[in-house]
Length: 73
Image (cartoon, rainbow, N blue to C red; front, side, top):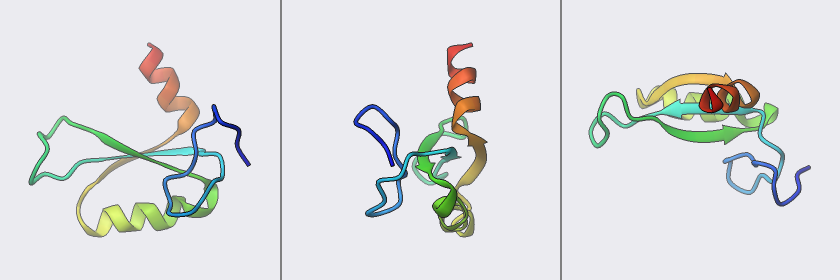
């Protein structure tokens, strides 16, 4: 589970700590370089990735720890 400072999964109703970052954009409304993010736990990573993927929105799936390290760099 998670505490109030832990990033949580973006899946509806899930309160599990996030492990993955799903970077995406909607090309109809976002510039190509813009990245929106959803967070995912292990259980929901595949489902959320498929949801974004079938719409052509998914750009990258990265471990949360790697995403945070890249943001700090």
